Amino acid sequence: RLKGVIFDLDGVLTDTAEDHYQAWQALADSHGFAFDRQANHRLKGVDRRNSLRLILEHAGAEVEAERFDAMLAEKNDIYRERLAAYSPANLFAGVGALLDGLRAAGLKIGLASASRNALDVVRLLGIADQFDFIADAGAVANAKPAPDIFLACAHGMGLRPDQCIGIEDAEAGVSAIHAAGMVAIGIGSEEALPDADMHVPATGQLTVANILSFERGAAA
Ligand code: G6P
Ligand code: MG
Image (cartoon, rainbow, N blue to C red; front, top):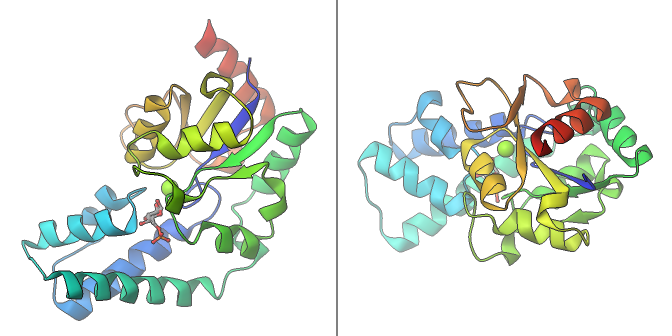
């Protein structure tokens, strides 16, 4: 029986996935590393350190540890400058109503983002109070695609993993949800997220009714 719904943040509740991409692109450009929107696909849902590793791998470049850390800080500064413009208007259409509906249906709501900026983002969006539990990316041992953050979130809500559903826009995230023993709703196309158990083009198109019926179908 479904008791909780666990959301990813970037690309699921708001368009920060685009701001992460723009910040990485600006970083790569200023350091002269080849990078583009196509290469960015592999970075979705991947934490900051591993993202930079993938960028350097893509560019066929290596940098020493000190420059690596400086680049991480530089990217985060660019990203946070973009965040300064965020307000509740940046919440994807329909998400506010979905969260209200889930709560009215007696379901718990969790956040499982790999982002160290997640708490600031949900505050800027005006939805921080909607969550029963916000998992801390800095407190888990292994990043997505490992299940840790989804398990920590279920635990924080006082639920078993099999009582929860996860919602993700990234392959690494769908893998993490499955590894946690949960069913996965993919935001995006079937080609982009072949492993997700159900797809919708946008989070705002989900309803409490279709989440519940999907859950019953998956259990049957
Ligand atoms: C999310 C995004 C990634 C981002 C990661 C870390 O998973 O999808 O693009 O790299 O969070 O975010 P942070 O804010 O900690 O750099
Ligand atoms: Mg995401």
